[in-house]
Structures are given as C-alpha cells and as structure tokens.
Length: 211
Image (cartoon, rainbow, N blue to C red; front, side, top):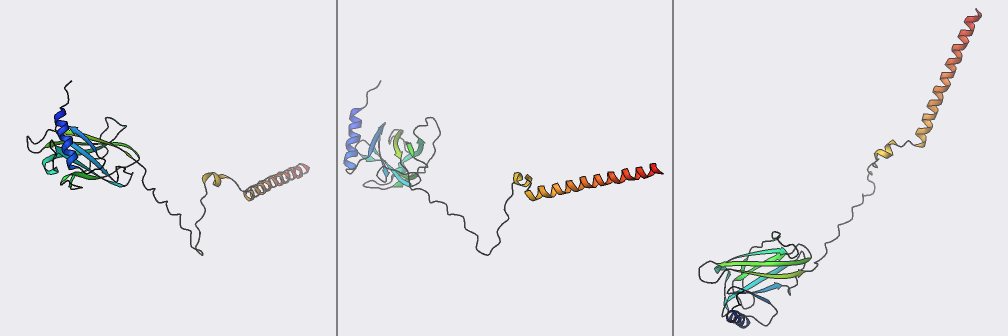
C-alpha cells in the first residue's frame, strides 16, 4: 500500500491555514487538491429551506483553483442509500465568500430530514494544472419550518339553499316505516278483494245448482 505524501499534504494544509479565517471548516485532500467545505447557515441545513454551499479548492502552497479553471460537478446523495443515483445535481456557480474569489458554490434545498453526502468531482480544463479529484462532505439536515395548516372550509352564506343530502345506496334500499305501512295496507286490500271474489263465485255456483 503506497504511503501518503506527507510533504504534499503538509504544504496543502499549511496553505489552507494561511488563506482561511479562523472558522470551523472541513478540509479534505484528493490528489494534489485540497477542498474546504462550508455550508450556510452554520453547517446546519434545514429541510425545505435554502442552504448555501461553497468549496474552496487549493493547490500546494494555498493557490486557489477558480471555477473557470475546473470542470466541476456536484451531486447530492442520501447517506444511507449506497449505490443509488443522486437525488440532486445542483448547478455550480462562481462565488466569492470570505477571502476567496470565484470558487465553486451553489444553493441546495434538501427535501427532507436525514443524513446526506455531497460529492464534488473535478478535472482541470487545461492539462497540468492539477490532478482530477473527488471530494465528499456529509451533513445532517434538521427539520425546517412546518407547513401552514389548510384553511377550514367556508360555511354557506345564510339565506342560501343548502345542497340536498347525499343518500348512499344502502340508505336508499332501506324501507322507511311509512313505506312498510303502505305496503301492508296494499297487501291487505289485495287479500280482502281475493276473499270477496271467492265468495261471489261460490254464491253464483250455489244459485245455479238450485235451478
């Protein structure tokens, strides 16, 4: 296993310390490029709210790599879903925060609470400037502002006609007491009429037999 180039890393970090103000930033080295990450506000992004991200890229000695000299790409992944495609690929733009000028940066809106891994890959637009690199930064996104509750439904103005109640099929098939009463009377009438017709027929037959 090859040993790390301690002199190179020491020169890179020394250059970073002279270029950066006394703030808490995460610095990572890939090849001969060092990247210092900063996420605003205060490295504590909130879900659904804009967060400003920038990465200061430097070479040994603290020489800054501006965005116009780097073919850089940014991708955002969920930290617990290895192998999945990125959920966001924000477009980088040149920013000049603190003492830096024209370094890669962007604005990110994380969709939900959780842990995210942000990966910056890059290669020089002109050969020999620096080696291709891949830098990563992990952050935990907290809950943001809660959404406003939906307004209650508006009440119907007084004096206006109310809509007819909705009757379900089960309610429509259930007979009411008045309907049952009407059905009983109708059946009783049919029964009485049938008995009367039978008596009249029997009397006619009896009269014919007497003759």
